[in-house]
Amino acid sequence: MAKIFYELRQNKNNKSQVFGRWFAHSKSIETLNTRKMAKHISEHGSVYTQDVVFGVLEKFRSCLVEMLLETKRVKIDGLGTFFTTLENEPGGTLKKDDFNVGKNLKALHIRFMPEQEQEMNISSREFLKKAEFVNAESLLGGDGEKTTSGGGSSQGGNTGGNTGGGQGGDTGGNGGGGGEPNPDGSTED
Image (spheres, rainbow, N blue to C red):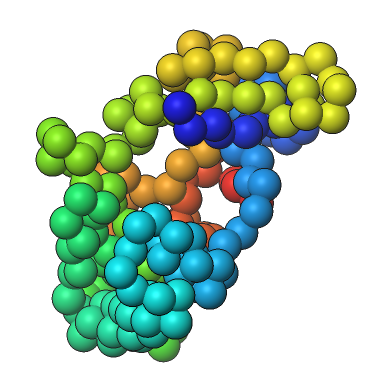
């Protein structure tokens, strides 16, 4: 089973309703760049060399951005759909005619909605069931514990990105890289 590392962090925002409570946050152990991912794919019994896989991934990246900037959604079967949302400046405008893109739009975000077809479902709840959770402190000799399949109610927290189609839209999303704020008021690193 895949291992997801997490660390526990205390909410230190004294204005939050959950001030002082502890929440799990995912802890990445490595970031794979395109070249490393291409090497990994080519080592999985692929007939394509690392350079060929790298070329395809690079072309995919540039074409994905191109299609998103043409207001198209890009669905990768078995993975999910990439799309854009707009983030507005707070407050909006009183009249429709007063809206100005340069003044009232804050950001254009790239979002991802995981596949939810039954055989390849990687939505948040289903993905949670496929992982084993390991407290990162346990790797350092701390007193972290290891939990499997969902982690129970004491582990977890909202560490994920956007999985709902309604997030963002014309009322804006959150400021940042596309994830929802955590219930403790923080956002992921």
